[in-house]
Length: 401
Image 1: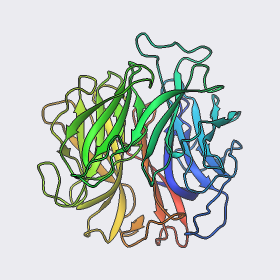
Image 2: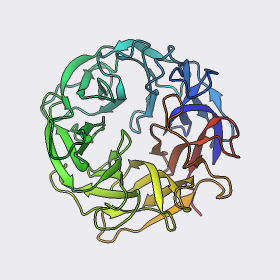
Image 3: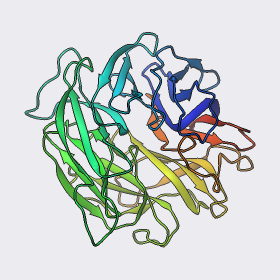
């Protein structure tokens, strides 16, 4: 485990082909939280020493609106680094990218509007019969909700030239429909591009798990149910495809309503082997002794090789530590997984009593595989003995014993 620097509201990680570890966002603002005005500039950082030392990258970003944390991602095939920063108007984003481990950057100053909630850049091959990219091997998408706090629409924009220009391609209402029977908003979160070019987005439909799928670069969508559950946490890091096209979703089921297992906020995993049409029975995947989980992130690489990162509690939710769980083959009939705690249990990362308010939230964490198959996790330490009086980025890897 390594501490990075002062962080803000989320933690994203990626590893380039050269082995450089990327973390974002770091915050260059000294405003005290919670103020609802944690405005940038917000930066990405790079380590070439497995987290022992970090360099602040010069890409940075404009001063943000403070409501939506930046998103960073490293594509495992192209090794391109993406860094997305919400504009001060909260209408669209600046999209930056680097193809040389962050030494040089290019930027598109304004992409999308509206569309600022749960923003993310996605990339992948063009689908069969889809428009083909030029100058860059993948189709690039920017997707985001109009707002996270009221019914709006999920907007997606597409670039066929590596991010230099984007065009609106479509979306769907978010929530997709109103229901007097459930009383809970239907929520859509930006997802991923499969190796076949299909878009997969996780959905919370009245507390039940579902998926939105587009096979035509976002122009039209199908929404398919997955499991009857009580979703406590589902976000932009909840879905991942492996290299063979199997799709995995991880989420946190709410108190007393776990699918098949009584629990209190525990992580579950499902997999589809047929591009989202059929899904496996949900499986609880917490490390031994973990009683409650906050946030979960999933990543996948070769066929069946899956890893999850989450904040877990062994003391009834009083404190939370970081965990990484890895599957060697999640597609077997009885998959085996192993887990490790990230931090010293005597120095937890977060307190269960810490209020999640604007300017002092933890939106999401993330996970990624390095080129050698090592799983990495990005987490945060908030105002504990390990990080007194501040919120600090945490990077960890599950090393072979």
